[in-house]
Image 1 (spheres, rainbow, N blue to C red):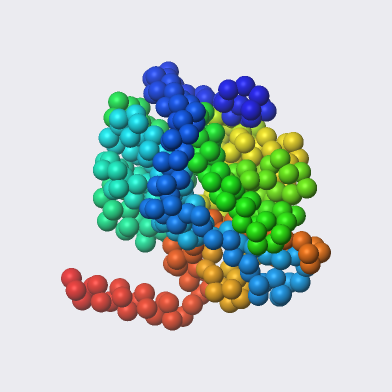
Image 2: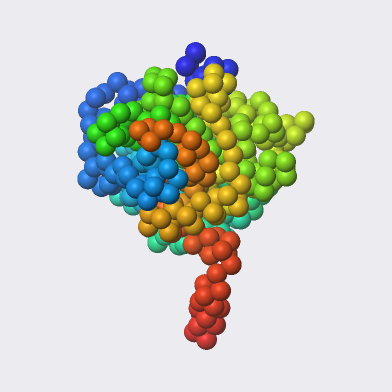
Length: 411
């Protein structure tokens, strides 16, 4: 970080004056926590007793045999409590909320995993909770909406703009301005104004700390490559931080290629030529925007990867050549998901399957004594409606029709 809140030329805190004191308070709480070893010990203890840390590192023996080449290892964040890496950041911020004496939390969510994790944290710590979610994401992630509400959270469907993640973030900031005294915004990824990118990356670094030890124990060496999907970028930064100083380990981020990078219907900020520098939602990074700085509509089969921006940390790492960025199309994602389920009995989230696409393209060309690691950022049960629709599964359609008829009769 070159100057406070910046990573190269990216980052910063472009916030309205009304939020200045709130961010000052948050920065102070965060800096004190980072200097306090007891805070990290409390965090690790919480994650090991309430969640499932350390999450396993699984050798994907069947996929490795299928492709030849390097051995494939999967970091199982899908086995973390609430089904994704999101709990790492959320529980850490929950401890900070307690320190600051706040009583209410708000959050944005796209795929719904961050919303479920935040609602879970609020239930455990006794906070009031409101979750903002784009109307389109509410429709395609209904199971997660159901669980958020049953956990006690109020879910607000955002109907503005593209009705996806960026609009949920905008609405969260509007809420925060009205209730700064008792409310903390639990931002879900390594984006937004400082200190959020640094803070979220710190909590997610537990992934990289664990996997570095695990891969040496399992494979007898560091991996030659580490892969992760990239929406905002928190799961990627989480695992990449275990290897940033090991230049022999290549780091690969995989964005949403949607219908293809030439289609204009994707969410690739760094792997395509469509991203450009801009300032929005409190920070500077690469955004998908037009020449007037208006944000473009994005598309991905994965609700968690359709954000218009990307972490300033990852933008800096890409600019410096430390992270290579690729993109996976919706079609490739469904094929990789299908293969992984049938070969390993693991159901990855649609987001995580983007990383699998790139692994499957490259692993066969690597030496057999090499090892590579994929961060399985979440599990796919949240995506059952989207996946069943994409596979055009006739038995699922029949099930939905029958259930709908049952509910109609029940009325």
